[in-house]
Amino acid sequence: MSAGKASGKLFLAEERRVTPSDLVRSARLLGGGYTFEDVAPDPDQPVLQGRFDTLQLRPGLILHAAAGHDLHDMRTRNTLNPAIKIVVVVGGATDLSFGPHRFLLGPRSPDPGARSRGALVNLAEQGEFSRRWQRGRDERKVSLTLMPEWLESGGGFDECAAHATLRAFTRQHLASQQWTVSARARALACAILEPAPYLPGLQRLRLEAQCIELAVEALGAVSAHGTTPAGGIFTSGERRRLALLEALLMEGDSEELNMSEIARQVGSNPTTLQALAKRAWGCTVFERLRELRLEKAYRELRRGASVAVAAEIAGYNSANNFATAFKRCFGCSPRQARQTALG
Image 1 (cartoon, rainbow, N blue to C red):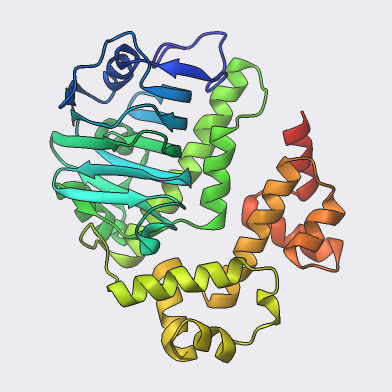
Image 2: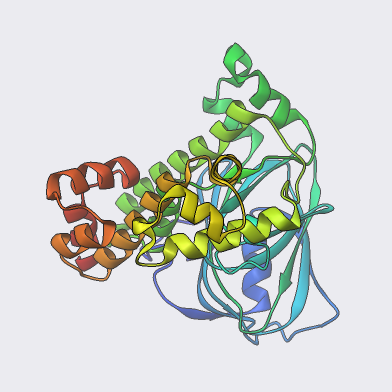
């Protein structure tokens, strides 16, 4: 699908080899001056293998998504038009910068504190964007661009006093927000990256609804907490403890541990660790454990597991309790998630 144009081809329909010429064409919706540093790749030789697409859903609302791996080590730059940028990485890792602010995002990010965070940056004027490519690195990423005309057409920020912080955010160039990506937001990003086989017009409408819900959650973080500098708010010791904690929670027997034992294993105490979890993930340690187990159940359902097996993975003895928790987290029932995956 050519960027921004409707056709009979579904978004992210097929895996392909993306060339520099494809990158330049895709970037035109977002800005201009796309350049390659240090290398001058053949415009027709692939630099990315996987699924890659950019689509203008409405004037000022642009979705970019990629699920693949880099074929070269290089760095690219381009100048972006004024907009709010929202980036969610649900697989692999990415290394990108908006102006001087660098973001290392994704489950495999070298920064443990950033593995569950998304990037939320406002460009009040044109600004430089860059991406560092790494040969063989995987990335599963959703990026939303919310331009001023889209926000003004439906946001209503200027008329609502409750949005004072959000209004300030949209007026400050390179304002950024530490945004902890919830299980629901991750599920939305995964659904965008694996779109259901709807007719093209219906798929486009569904993508728009998913993107709007994702944008609402990200922007809600600004209204709730205000802006913070890009680049992280955790010390090296806190990042190490977060990495140890997440690894511990991912283990199969983590539910057998009490809070005191969990804190001991990561070199902390229960009160300090709960406060750190709140800062990093916006929830308690055991709420994070439930999120991780529900996410695992969701992935297994998408692979064809039965609802009963998924409930067991999530730690629920009652199918009704599992269904209630699952729908609260992902916005659909376990059966619907499984049926969507199986077509």
